[in-house]
Amino acid sequence: MVRAELQAIVRSPNFRSSKRYPAFLTHIVEKTLAGEASEIKERTIGIDVFDRPADYDTNDDPIVRNTASEVRRRLSLYHSEASADQLVSIHLPPGSYRPELRFTSSSASTTSASDHAESALPIVVNTSGEALAKVDAGKQFRLTGLYGLIIFALVVIGSFVVWLASISRVKPLDDVWYDFFHTRNEVLIVMPVAPLPPDIGPVSPDWLKNNPNIAIEDASAMERASGLLTLHDIRYRIRLESGVTLADLRNGPVILVTGRSNQWTMRLLAPLRYHIVNGVVNGLLTYGVTIEDATNPQNHWTYNDGKSGDTLTKDYAIVARFRDQLTGSVVMVIAGTGRNGTEAAGDFVTSPEFLAEASKRLPSGWQKRNIEVVLQTNVINNETGAPVIVATDTW
Image (cartoon, rainbow, N blue to C red; front, side, top):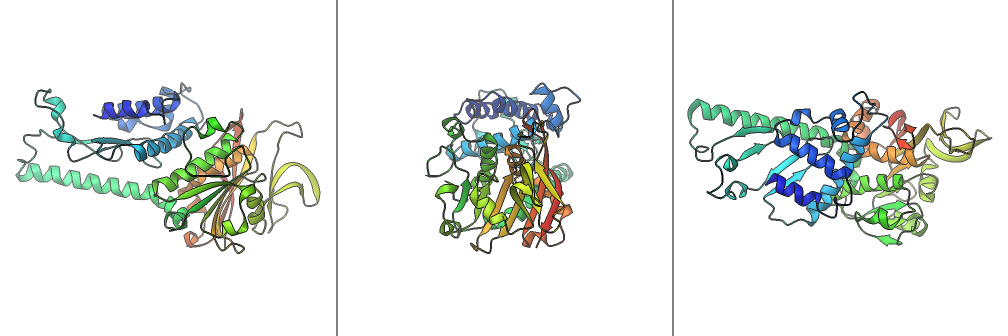
């Protein structure tokens, strides 16, 4: 049943146009079915699926993390369109590379009596994809005494550990996105000007293909954020910054994507400690775009956009969540000084691991305060590396 569902997924419109995403999903599901879930790790996936060398740097080459994030989003789209009476479904929990196999209560009864006895044995699978127990269907309700009590205890303990693990993965996201996950209003996602209809709903998998001039890094950040909203059943709308008014920004939570090409990002960041400026730092003309520190003007990070003739090796970004005094709305900024910075910011603000690391750098009680985080990412052959925190502020 799992393999049948896997084939249905990889043949769906959300996956069939790509080679990378079906290969990734097939690999982790087959590993789980083979009882090798403990071997599903970022480096081994990079080696086995994407032909990376055994000593490759996962920080400089985030292909596995990026692929997992996109597979997670596409699975969400697939399940939103799938039949409600599925016997088995495949999910990829946030922050994990191990698939979660979910069975309905009628799954065990779907195997016919003429099938092999082995295929009729139900498998209990936890959220990390590892088999907990395989029990003969004819005996599963006749386990008594100490043996039955031990199995029952193991299952309960295993479920509790899995529950704790899932909470630890999700909590960093809820700490940062609480106002967005619990709003009754529609969330407005504001994108930079691009060849896009002025007012659209959830993005389809063909959106990038139909809009080739949109920066793929900006789209990646937007898709990560919209994917989180989709998972929490939050309504959202995507609009171009040129068509957004101040009144629009007052209607509910707002997500601003990218930096200098989004006028609303530049305007709402301007009063904050860390903000983006073009060309001039401390009265001096510079190449590229700079993140400036209003508290300490000598402290700044300049993105070289190539005009100086230097090779692009680093990009920077601001991730900010704050209640804006002008609009009264909660605002999330995902803005790079360049395209790679925006992509890294989108990765950072939707990753439980990165956010958990950020919480160690922030003061106690930061969850209920406004926050700003300045990020740096290495750029190799135009590919975005992992985000690294270089500065934070809360108020």
